Length: 496
Image (tube, rainbow, N blue to C red):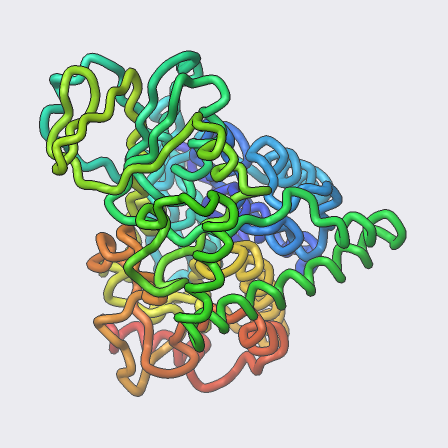
């Protein structure tokens, strides 16, 4: 076993967009700190490295999905996966982050010792060699889904199907769907991305859904943003485009919450205009209100164009069974298929599946809340970066990492070694998770494993960037909820 003897100041788990963001913020705001990143894969990118299905792209506009400190200068609003990977890699290179990354390291266990005021992290290399790292502060940047396994229900008659079954999370590089009949099971962001991407080459693509999703078409190129980029310095143009899109996205969400019927009419009206007067709106009319689940966006109506061209179609029904030649539906209709794509969703997993222990006591995320949506309740010197669900993920990454840098510098200035959030009021809401704002299937399936929310601040996930900015960027560090050093040790003993 290899042991890294000298403790790091900060250890980051994951080199996806959150981990790279955290590293860049540390480099910019805490330049003297020693840090490392443990990345399970062999490259930077996280989600954008793992997923390689046709057409993979962002479902948030890139002016708010990009980091606040490094402008997105491409004209595309919804960028493709390779462009996003290139942006993240270029950002990492600009701040000399790659030299801090230890690739091919799977974190198995993170153990806190109050006596030493250190985290000890056990990892395994791709070759199976054990390594140990120690650090004063731990930042989990693993996202919240399982890289090893997507959500994949078993369907009756699967073994009878003569064709190929593919899950988007593990897309075969050599999959040839030219001239093939493809059925995509699902109605979320992955499915509506795959349909128009596969339709030009396939014989026909059918999206099979149990229930519809709200879909909004946005322009591929933002002409106003492109104009600002042309005539203004890149940083100023980016700031203006970013601010505008944040306000638009927030306004759209607030309008959905306050006037759901009006937003429903607006969204369905736009879909009908895209599909045509003779469209069967049954396939595009969800049973829930806008933003009870994530709103899906499509660039320049590409999904609707594929449907109008006859290259794609949508069916709303339940699966009775797979057959040798496709899928038979509950209605009795049979969908012929050579390839079936199970775009059935993701499987939630916290901390990348690793074990967390504090002074010998195992930590279960479901028994804890997140303080200010960043620090783990009753866990010393530990952050969990979780982005927004109703706007760009990276907006929360930026301000959460700003807060962490403020906290670390504050602890240095005061001579503190340990900080741990404590809930003295007992305000945990056992029925509300950190993703409780959504009723999506993957959230409901993960209710037993996700961290909880509280009934009051600072234990609530506001999902409101405009509210979080002043709190995380300028709010008081010592607010009575965050305990330091000797106070923190007492908190840990009482929580054990």
